[in-house]
Every structure is written in structure tokens, then in C-alpha cells.
Image (cartoon, rainbow, N blue to C red; front, side, top):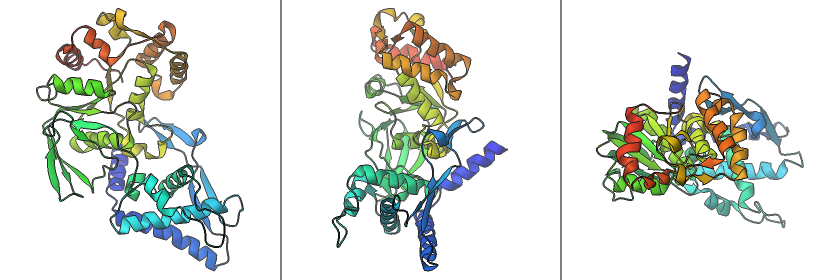
Length: 379
């Protein structure tokens, strides 16, 4: 019951309109105005960021932000500059929302950067000042950057028999299997009010760490006969890709299988897709897929598929990462502890493309179909 209630609450948050978000910003500003009218020190409240306020929610299956708050006041000399910057970003994002405009986080920085009249003080000295303020605003009004009509650089590609509708571009409908071998470039803003997921006959979504493997599977014609959708993340999944993976799972009820290199870096990529990240713990409910499963690569594959001659040596940084991951609560199950121990002791890694040592099409004709058929997944 608790899980159903949580999913219902998350879906309600995802359906919040731009005008509703703008209203939240307005209410926050009105509180400041009333404080000023009462000759009180106006304040802005947001959530504290950092590891000390990140918690592992075992019931929900993802990382979440704790309940620690911070208050920023105008009359505190240490807060005054950030307070000014916060009000500027509040005003500008509300303007975007009410006028159906979007901007990159770089563009909003340049829009707001200027020298304050009568002073030599600039509103912002660099994007490293505006970016954290945007995150503070996200937390303050309980939303994600994308619903503030802001976006970063896009990364990731979708391919397969799925029809989408771009509501922001003449309601264009398109199928991701008919855009050439390159598929559809996933935008950084992938919200329901912009991109609607209409229909698919796919039975699962396969997420690939490397674009090279993504392209290999398309070249081998894997998606159609295996009834799957493909997403290539090109390394760590960007926000837009994570959001789309989440939406496909939730809205189209497709299982998600993640396919990365067999090393701590690849396994962490899987972890971020499944449980979220510490940096974006506040947004895990919008981006994580706790039901996701890991299909490979594993260090067991080295022996099972006779790949001993094509392993790579792990760097000390990888070994250190593996040791850190062993302590994470979400890696405490036996299967993952075994993989991490092997990585630490054997100090080897195995790449996705090492399967080409068997044959170029081996991954499409044997490896993936066999793993799925035999239900060989890690949790």
C-alpha cells in the first residue's frame, strides 16, 4: 500500500504544470515581500545538499534527500549576495514558465549577468555561481530543473519501435525506429508536457553504456526480432536519458535491463540508473528505476564465455571505487558483493566490446538472448 501511495504521489508531481510551478515561485516571493513589509529580515529556505543529508530509502529502493534545511537571509552579510542571486533566478524562471520559454543553464547565466547600477559589483561572476542557485530553487519549490524550463547539454540516444509526440513542435509524431541508424537524440528536457510517449510493441528496454555497443546492436538488427527498445547513454547517463528511462518504465510498464562494461565504473552507472545518485538524491523519484536489472558484463562472464585473453587490468582508482561500493547499502546483496570482491582481488575488467572476440554478432545472437532467456540478471 505504501509503495502504491508513493507512486501515486510521484505521478501527481510529474503532472504539475508550468503555471503551477510558477505559482509556487510567486508564493515564495510573496512571503519575502511580507517579511520586508513587517520590517523583518527576508529569508529563503531550501534543502541542505551534500552527503550528510543523503539517505538510503530501502523501502522505496533509491537514494533520497534528508530533511535538513538551510535558511538564507538578506541582512546576513554572508548570505546577501546569494540571496540577491536567488531572487534574480526566481524572477527569470517564473518568466520562462509563464511565457512558455526554455533556456539552457548557460543562457540564464548570461541573461542575468550584469553590473549592478551604481556599483562595480556583477550579479554573477561565473556559471559556478548560478548553477547551485538553480539547484536550491529546485529543492525549494519541490521540483526538478526541467520543470523550471531549464536544461543542460543533451546526451543519449533512443532507438526502437516507439512512437512519440513532440508537443512543442507542431505536435509532430515520430517513430524512433524510422529515423535512420542513429536513432533519436534524447533531449535534456523530456517532460510529459513536451514529449508524449504514445505506443510501443517492445517487451523491454535495454540501456547500453557505450554508443559503440548501441550501434552494434542496431547494425545486427537486434531490436526488432527481440522486441526491445535501445538507449545508448555514452557513459554515465545524463539527466534527460535517466528521466526518459524512468518514464518508459513507469508509463509503458517495460522492464529495464542495463548493459555496461564489467568494472566498478560500469556498475556505478547501473547503480545511478537504478537507485539514483548522491548529487541528485532529491530527484530520485523522477529519475530512478528501482526495478531495473543488470544483464552484464560481469566478471563471471570472463570464464563462462572464455574471454580470459581479452580482459583489461584495472587501475588503482577502479580498485578504490570497488572498495567504496562494497560499503554502499544498495550493494550489500551477495551477488554484488561477490562481483566487487572479484574486482578487488583479480584486478581485471571486461568491456562490452570484448564479446567481439567471439564474433561481431555474438552479443546479439548469443550473449543477450541467452541471458534474458535464462533470466541471468544481477539485482
